Image: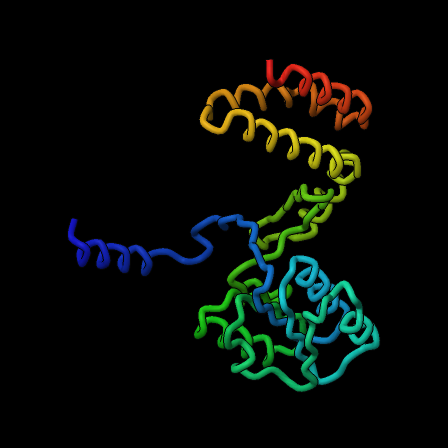
Length: 238
């Protein structure tokens, strides 16, 4: 098939399909050092800014008025000077150089302006609770250190995702964070010992973490899990 024929076929497919025809493609974004714009100055905007800063993004927060908690966030040393507040309404030029934008405002005119600007500039856009204006949704996420479990419903009923996340939080305790660090160190050790043996690495890692090891973590039997890892390490080079 020629390139032109393929392009024509793709265009025909696009005219027959709607965004709702396809499931969403789940991803985990690397935001460190990237510019993210938050439009709005309320509690939801504040939460979004906190989450983006935690992911390492540079955040421009744009709103005509600011509550005290945003000023505190701007001054927080953990933000590392990566938050800039802009005291005015949104303009399309605010998205120049941005990787993504979150509109957390109830103003319909502003919501639509953000979505239009994002579409024209190729910027990922989330308008909170307005599915038709979004190019991505933010899942309900459970975090245990580097472990993240994201639950989403393609925007159809976010409260179900939240309920499932909270149920999982009762099953997956804080001990998983330390366990993951331990497993990551063990994986690095295997890669160092067997740099040219992919099959051997996989075999040894499977021996480290069979179903029984997961059962120990789910039962919060962390001491037994640690003993299993140490026993595995002693036999690693043999």
